[in-house]
Length: 101
Image (cartoon, rainbow, N blue to C red; front, side):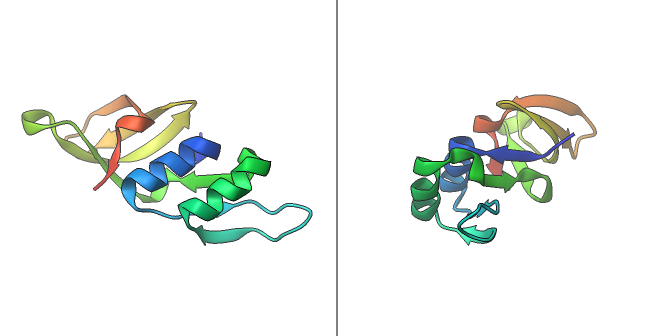
């Protein structure tokens, strides 16, 4: 199980939520934390697989009104995340629908 999203999905999530992303080590540069969205886009133009964001450490929220809940991402597979909600439920959600709480 992984809670990591990569490439353009990581950049888009970071931009929507005001976050920075990380960069894996490559032959020319060491791994880096705290890349701004514009820096990440420049790296991704060469190799999008170098950019990542770990959602596991973030509290996320989804839904509105009575359907609103806060939780933690337990697993990511493609564009879907399994979230353990404070209400006690575990549900699949589109990563694109999640916001940082």
